[in-house]
Length: 248
Image 1 (cartoon, helix red, strand yellow):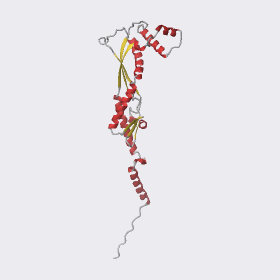
Image 2: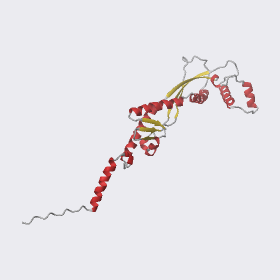
Image 3: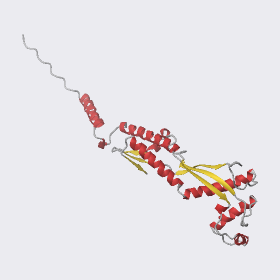
Image 4: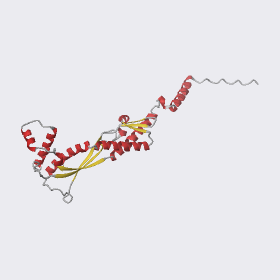
């Protein structure tokens, strides 16, 4: 019997060959070194998720991290210039003469004293002691930290994570987050009691809040809040495995 002829192998169709080449190329690129920067969204999506997770953790830390100052104020003594001459100052005001910022501040105190029926011109005058509790920290309202998952377009501006494990982070500016005037009871308030009605007390505490906020800010409460918060966040992120933390 004659030997069977082998059927000739069919040549791969050009279209099939192209598909195979594409598959091989995709497999290579998806496993290639990240230096190619061709991740087709896979690596980028992972980084986005990691960035959102970082912002969420930092948000929780910032919400808990506060610095507290307790400030006792003796009104009006703590708010008037040393060796002030009230008569001369009032004369300058009446004559419309130029007043420095310090003199304007003294006049504000003088006018409030009159409202409270205090005579600061006397050597011995009534006074009020007010205890203020001032807290400094981070206000995250209206920032990407509040709900990072809802603002993916802002995430990359707030945090970036590099291949070598370095994380770069932008923190919001620290602010005074809370100001509390501590109420004094007659049993704990050992200083001269003054007959102050609610409207006068409101005027006094409003004045003191503005002045004390300026004082504690100059004493570094906001810098302390920022330094303490940054230090805590850096430790948390390094414990999570990041090599270096840079605050922008």
